[in-house]
Image (cartoon, rainbow, N blue to C red; front, side, top):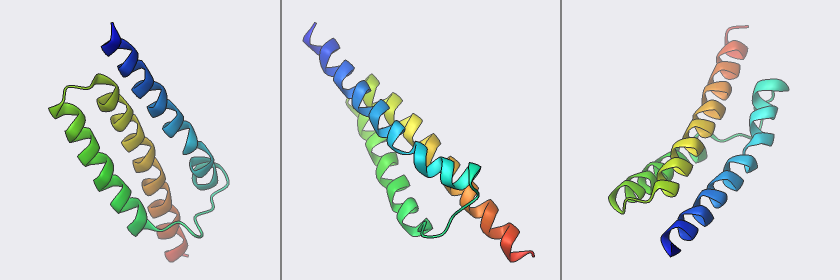
Length: 92
C-alpha cells in the first residue's frame, strides 16, 4: 500500500513537471518565438532526463518511467520547434 502512495507522489510530481513546460511550448509553437532558448541547455536536460528514465527502469518505478517519457516528449517538442523556426529564418 505504501508503494502505491509513493508512486502516486512521483506521478504527480511528473505531471507538475510537464505542466511547467507548457509556457515554453506555447512560445515556440504558437507564438513562433525562440529567442533566448539554448539548444545546448535543452540537450543537457534531455541527457539528464534520459538518465533519470534509465534509473526509473532499473529501480522499476512506474511513475518515474512515465514522467520521464512524457517530459522527454515535451522537451523534444520544444527542440523540434526551435530547430524548425531557426531553419525557416536561415532560409529567408
